[in-house]
Length: 98
Image (cartoon, rainbow, N blue to C red; front, side):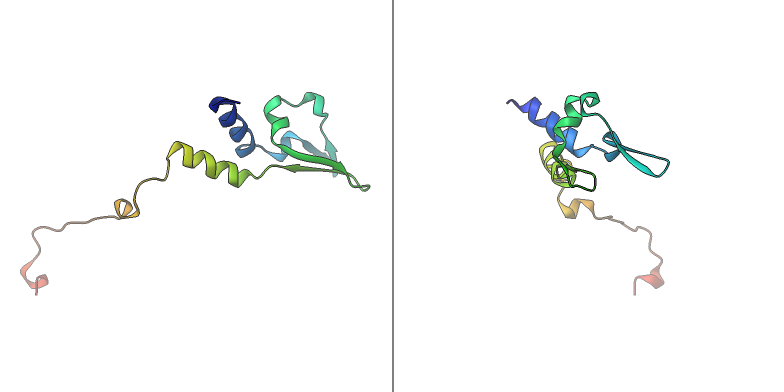
């Protein structure tokens, strides 16, 4: 497994959507045929089981995948103090300077 395949797997999980796997028609939940899913969609699935009352589809943790992508991309590496708004005033009226 190389870097590109790891990133593709993380992207598939991070941007997965339940509507890729199910649809609701006339108030009933329909599960899509897994043969019609893309490789990326299949890789986002953590598990599928028949609960006896229906099919349960569990996806991998989207938040964790997003956190790993953000860390890899360095999106939030700016120190907190650099995010502060700095305002410099010039020409302050004398009465305000007291």
